[in-house]
Length: 146
Image 1 (cartoon, rainbow, N blue to C red):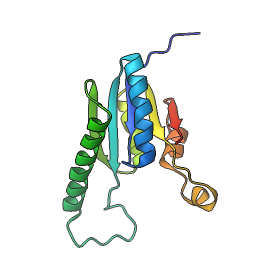
Image 2: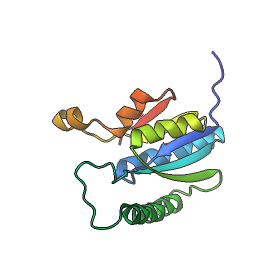
Image 3: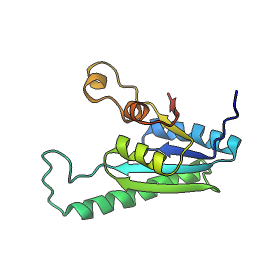
């Protein structure tokens, strides 16, 4: 069996309790392997949202969402002492595709994501970002359930 090297970990967050819980595991794994941890947040591109008619310019809304995400991630970093070899990345687009794209471009070794306990019709209709990333990514994905 070959040795597994984990030097870069991607921890996508939608700033929910589930992704916050998964962040604890991402931190533990990063510390264990002395890996760089990327805290990643993706903002849905409101320009691509079906039927969205903005009353404010889309760029202004997205910038406001980025500012709020930065504040929330800073609270998360402080709460769990996520310092040191940690980088925060915020992008705009379709979350599953952007996560996979980021992982590929940055040679990520492991993606750590929270599971959203969807079931029944909701799961059938929408799936989850984690499930989509698991289907699309060639990288290992650790799904953390609360």
